[in-house]
Length: 460
Image 1: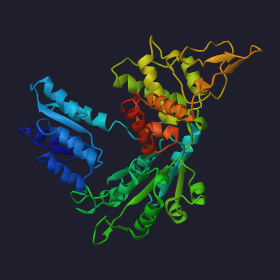
Image 2: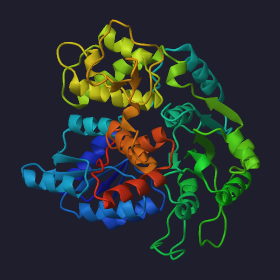
Image 3: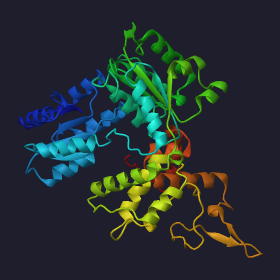
Image 4: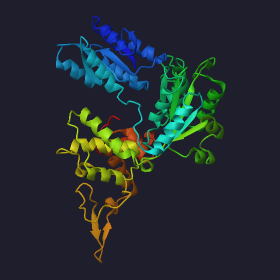
C-alpha cells in the first residue's frame, strides 16, 4: 500500500501516517493538493490519498480526473466537526470520511476496503490449477507474458499474481487500460510528456513506463492500441528506453512487460490490425485463462466467496446457497465469466430472503443455460421468457420483443440492459458487449442527449 498524506490537521495526519507505516504502508506527505499533483506527475504512484477535509477536495478530484489519474481520496477531519463536513467531502469526490484523531483499527479497515481486491486467485477446478502451475513456473523470470481469455476471466488479477510471485514483487506494479484512453492521449500515458508538449500539458508528467521502472507494467487490452503507437512500444521494449512526448533525449527504463487481450491476436496480426513483431515480443509466454464454462468446479467456490463478500459489504447476514440455487448457477453459460458471476451474487445477496440464498434470488442474463431446466420445474417470474403460441398451439420465443423494433433500438436496449446488469460499471459492460469503453461512452452520451435515462456510473 502506497499512501499520500495531504495536509497536517494539527499533526493528526502525521500520527495517521505513523500508524499506516507500522502496518506496512509506504507514506509520502505533502502540504497541499498542488504539491500532491506535482508528486503524482513526477511518478509517485499512490494507492490512496488521505486529505485534510478543509482543503479543496472538489478541485483535487477534478484535477485527478482531468489528468486521468485514478486515486481514491479519503477525507480526514477532526472528530466533532459535524456531519455536514463529511457529507460535503463525499459529494466533492472523497470515497470515505475518516474522523481524527486516528484509530488504528479504523485505518486498517480503510486500507483493507481500498485494497480489497485481494489478488489471491480463488479456484478449485483442475483447469485453473494447470494455469497457476505455469504462472508459478515463469513468474520469477523477466520474460514478457501475454495473458489471454474471454472478458471477465480475471486477466488483471492473474497479472498481479505473476508480479507478486516475481523478483520485482517489492517494486511497482503499474496497470494501463489501453481501451480506456483516447488514442491521441495514450502515447503520453505510456511515455510521459514535457510541459507544453501539447494543449493541456500544463506540467511535466511521468508516464507509466517510468512509473513502473524496476517493476512490472501491465498493458491491459493491448489489442486496442493503434498500430502507429505499437511501433513506438516495440522500440521501447527492444531498446529499453522511451521518449517523452516533447522530450529532447531518451530515458532508460527497466520494466517487465505483461499484456492482456480478449481477442485472438493471431487473427488480429493476420488482419493487419496488430504488428507481428510486437506480438512475438509480448508472447514469450502465453497464459490462457479458461472461461467459467471450462472450469465448472470453480462456480460453487466463487459463488460462496462473492456471497460472503457482499453480505459483509452491505451489512447483511451471511446466507449459504441452496442446492437449487447452486444448480441454477452451474447450468448457466456465463458469457461474462467471473465478473458476471460476481454481479449475479451481488444481486442475490440483496434479494435473498430467509436463511438461504434460494434460486428465486438468482437473476440470470446473457444467454441460455448449458442444460435444460427440469420439465417439472416452474420458472420463476424473473427468469421466465415471454412466449407466444402459433396456430398449432406450439410455444415460440418472442425474442425479447425485438420484432417491430429498428436495429438501433435493439442495440440501445441491449446496451442499457447490460449496463444495468453491471450495476452501472462502464468497463464491465463494455467487456460483456465486446465493444471499446470509448464506443460505449459515445453511445451513452447519445442516448442521454436524446432524453433517455442512462444508469449512473457504478463501481467495480
